[in-house]
Image (cartoon, rainbow, N blue to C red; front, top):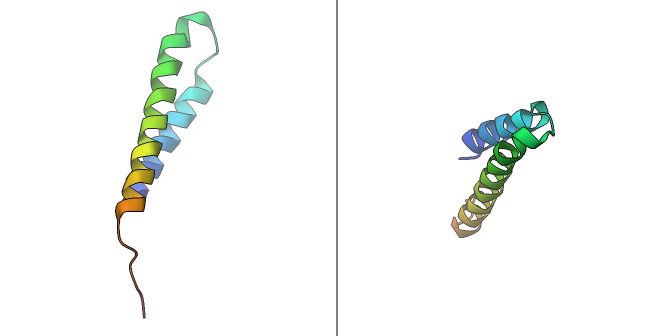
Length: 56
């Protein structure tokens, strides 16, 4: 599950870096930042609820 999350979050972060911090982009930047935060929370919750895999 980590790879798709990492790809999407990396792309979102890159998009934020590419968007100039001008008033016209405030809403787009907020939407991206909010979605990244939600994805991080969901990933962390999922990771905590999955049982640890024992390797021998």
